[in-house]
Image 1: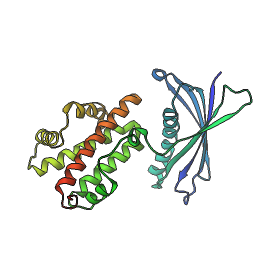
Image 2: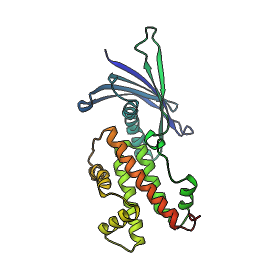
Image 3: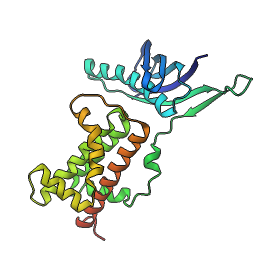
Image 4: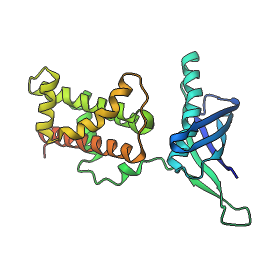
Length: 250
């Protein structure tokens, strides 16, 4: 017996009307045991999707990724052909309660946060970061934050955005020491922030193929490690800037 889950969501902004006739997509990934069919459509910006197949073993994270990528393909195509920008807000999934005989269902919300981040105990505050964003160090700080937000939105490309954030830090700190070569700038960064090269290499391992247009597969555990390493380095970077910037000194 195949599993069938129903997803709900919306296309933003709602001030621009978006509609989509029913689309059918077959999703197969033998390495993850996925063999499913996705049906989805949008009426007045409200999205409904049905995923059917061998999917019971998949986490909500993976289920959300499958539906999000399919809808994003359409949104990207519209942006390319019309210049109209839309975003997907996938709200939740309806699942059968198989252990019950009365046909009950369960609705799981897709919370708009990532546990790997929310479980952290940050040593910097929102106020610290905002103050740096409007300081003389603001441009590289803002670039880092933009890339990290993209890393959370685009899971398949997370390593690319994480590594680009690290490269921004490398260039910024290297320039502060008047170093111009990449290798010397990486040395400066590791020295100032007390960063292990092996950690940076872990992110680079997955980022390099993406930077050259090649898709790369990684597990949920590997994704969480990439995110954790990057967040630790960026947080150390923010602490350093806070300690050296007039706006951050207390």
